[in-house]
Image (cartoon, rainbow, N blue to C red):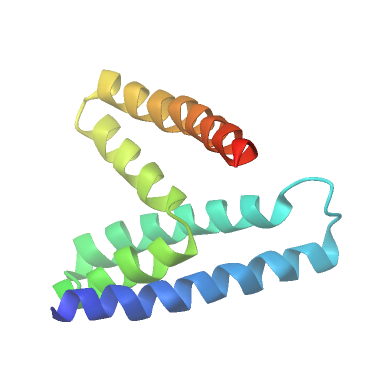
Length: 124
């Protein structure tokens, strides 16, 4: 139960941080391209790489702190970081085909699912 509470709190902080960071980006850049979301996704990828490698593998983070930071905070901030880290892990493990399938399915099927959801939403 403790991990669920940590994910809940971290997710709330992460989502709030995503909203704030995206708005800060749009103070400096035009809204004609999703720069805010791009910044959030790229910064989340850097942070999960740092946390999982720099801190977790080198200093063995407390499992509860790892859950709070990665699943909670970064999960609320951007799930793109989890997708990126898991793809890199597949590549590191020599699972190149699975990495390609993960990227293709996540992006391709994700776009199709969004389109399908938008289509269904227009029917309502």
